[in-house]
Length: 337
Image (cartoon, rainbow, N blue to C red; front, top):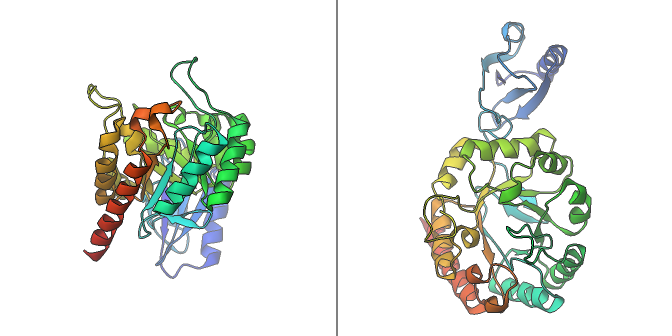
């Protein structure tokens, strides 16, 4: 339920509603707006009798929100959220960001070399997996804490904020010591214990869409994080599983403008995992930005043919440099329109 206040409602009016909602056994979440204040009611599992609330001073109307996500929706939060990742702003109206780096941290030389190169080309953040969820148990699973330490060294040398994946609630504290943006991979989108734990920290979270998740399920997953108090969430489309086998996944670019209609959270796109093919990464990255994405995640490796994971979809250094030049031209064109 959403309680919309008149523009001249006072703080006393808001406090009175908060108290009444608490007496009803729910939680009130004031949402200050540019023109008026709204109050979200959380914790109800069905219809709430609004008769007491409608009688209170300052109340203009009550909207019953039936969606499984509330804090994530524009009904509760009409203004766009801007996420701050170590000084890099992500969201509507900000310059689109590029996150570049290898699928996995393999060695000190590999991650530092990549970090310095993507920085030189204009990337805004460094990505790299230390904990790697893999389909098969006999494949490379990442360097774990050693990988985090190498990421920290590469981030310091390049000056880039670090993005890395978190797989377990038990490791949130450890990963948060090193990472500026904690990534929830597609396989963990509905790891609700992990999402709740990430909601209790005050570091930004990048939440990837599950490979078979609907838009509603995607937003409901983000709701778990916001419900625990962390509003710094970036959504990420990385392709969904369909009948098509020509690409690794099917990149659903329609989700970008759709999410912007439904939610205030920023959304990025990962064309590397979506396509699985090096030749398709740059075209789809540019298409994502035209669709309105707030940024892209790109896998880059100094020697993709020797990569321990995701080599076929990783850009070479020359390929990444060319893509960044094209993105720069595209961004100037979009801003001039």
